[in-house]
Length: 74
Image (tube, rainbow, N blue to C red; front, side, top):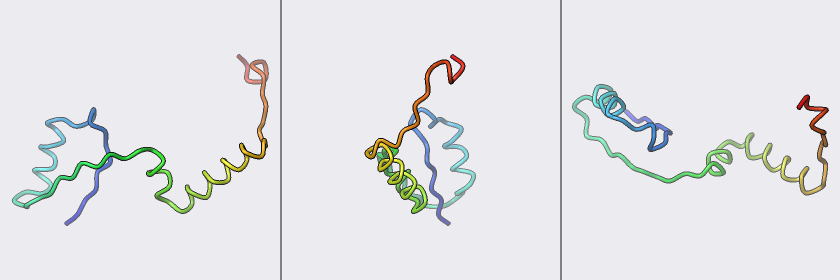
């Protein structure tokens, strides 16, 4: 069995370890810590990557929508 959990160190606690112990009872497991930035995560999907590239191109080509604080109701 294989499982991947995406979390932050702030979310790690004893309950999470107990959950893993129950889920993988009597298994030998490897725990790998890999730092991941948000860009890696967002680029992991072809659809997300394309969306991000289009958004970057829009900013670079000044295709921006301008709103005033009044337009936003602030």
